[in-house]
Image (cartoon, one colour):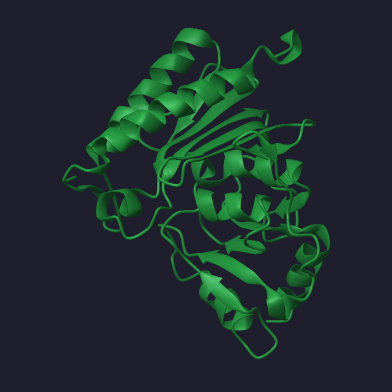
Length: 262
């Protein structure tokens, strides 16, 4: 790792691995839900993973900001912000109904993600990216499915998020119409389906109301894998955006145009 980026990617990879081991220690336990709102819960695994990551960041980069799902933001007036989802996909972790859960760590410079690491622990997939240096899964380069440009052939993740959950319904109605996509999927996790776009397995993803920690790391990953990531106004995604549309560049434009006619 060169000195210019101060080892940000290597640090994020190591901490994501450590946090992933913590999460998997909880995987076989009976995890009781801790309800934080009417539609959202966390578990002891979320808190343990979050605590490990936050302590590591404060120790290594004491002047950096931290934006985390589980605890209050740490504001240090830095241009650098670490964005943490200690367990994205808590439903899958707790119930075992899907392997879509993991640890997501991003570093943003200003509002732009420059490092993204997603440890999909049950799938044994470690996704990594750094701005200008490509995207990888378990050390092998990955690329979005650039050959998929026909909307009718698209396998697409569509997520309602935790807040304003009906906002996506007009989009979903259009996508599932006669001229729409092949199939929509929702797994209770944003980061893993977005990783699967970067690796060319899924083709597109749309959500109207997610949190920054759901998206920041994977935005860097998809862009480095050759994809395009914007909000639903087709502006380049940046930290603070709630909506997201991701696909290869040609398909992204077709989907955006298609959705405007709803």
